[in-house]
Image 1 (spheres, rainbow, N blue to C red):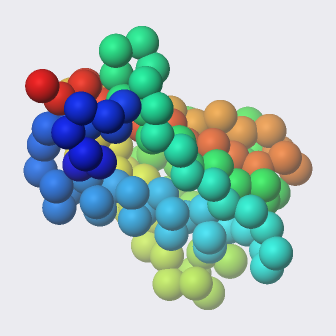
Image 2 (image 1 turned 60 degrees about the vertical axis):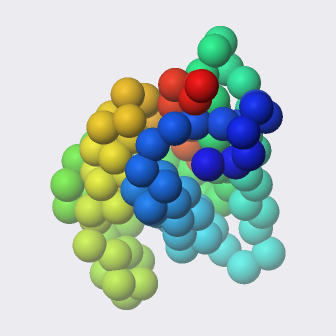
Image 3 (image 1 turned 45 degrees about the vertical axis):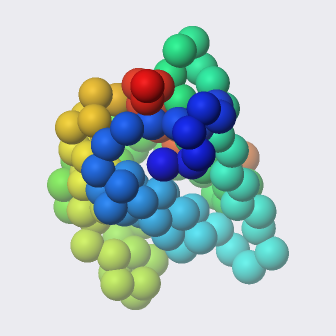
Length: 124
């Protein structure tokens, strides 16, 4: 996906993996205010390729963090509805990542942004 031999080389369905990246970027942009930062990084993580999408937005309440991967889940229902969100994006991303033998995790401190990390097996 990112160039054979580099730290970001994985094998898989390119369209599905691009969809995962788009979902994560879309969520980061939707859930941060104007002027906020969204960063993307790719690197090695214990033999896996790790893709991190981080923002410095409002973060996700601890009680909602596991729920964000469920179908139709929305942390801020009013805001999500006004932005056209169905609450399916992260559930789809998790399913696609798992189909590739990987995992997706969330680290968030309310008031201090959110980081989604996708770990995929390194390609040959």
